[in-house]
Image (tube, rainbow, N blue to C red; front, top):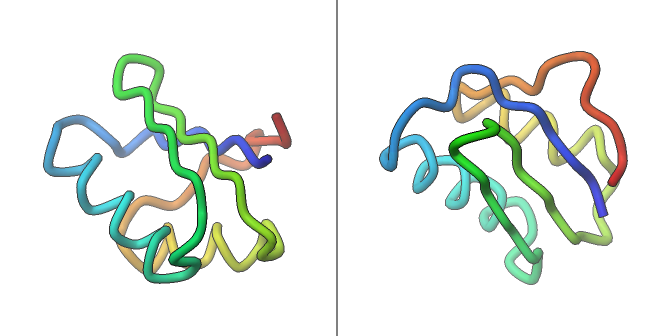
Length: 69
């Protein structure tokens, strides 16, 4: 499981866009998003950098200090 800090996430629309981007990268991924802490936990078999790239492409680049959960 990966944990991403997403400082640009600020509303429900952001949550939907982030979820969609992660599901496009890996349709089977388990995605849990906490808007209050601006974090996403992703259970996926894809490499972390691929998921981070999908987030960045959607306009929500993860903070550099994000780590594995």
